[in-house]
Length: 209
Image (cartoon, rainbow, N blue to C red; front, top):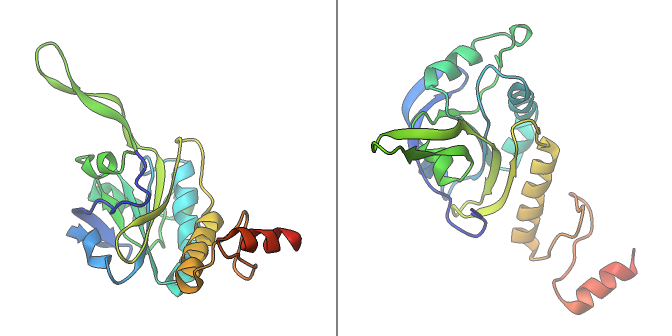
């Protein structure tokens, strides 16, 4: 499912915020109209690639804050698993020090709404429900603008970690376009020249290359 250009599915679910506070009704809609959101999914707590991404987001959190972006992580683990992982030191495989929200999607409905669940519910011949596949999320990432519209998405398979620098680059590109109305060419980064989306604009841009 491609969600770019569509309203991001909203949700209310348990989460751990500020590294230790468990709340039962974390709501994505609280940020609509106020902040940009980077919503990312990861397969599971207490794994291997996942903490590298989660900690890398925390290391860059000041950069996201500067851009008025709320980072939110989601997995199909419980809020209690999140809390335990957040209390565990890095040397013991934990993610202690992470402050942005980690949402618990035990029902898997959020992952299904964003089409990142690595499997699906099915029924056998007796009409009994079972899960066919892996009941975890792929590494999906969604950049949601202040109006609640998805502007960028990327989905990696579980072994493939994401680039947090690329996520920041996409935030910069979106905010530059919103402010200036100019589009951002290949490999554009903050400080680079953008271009006017006309034939004359692209001709002038390419002539400078």
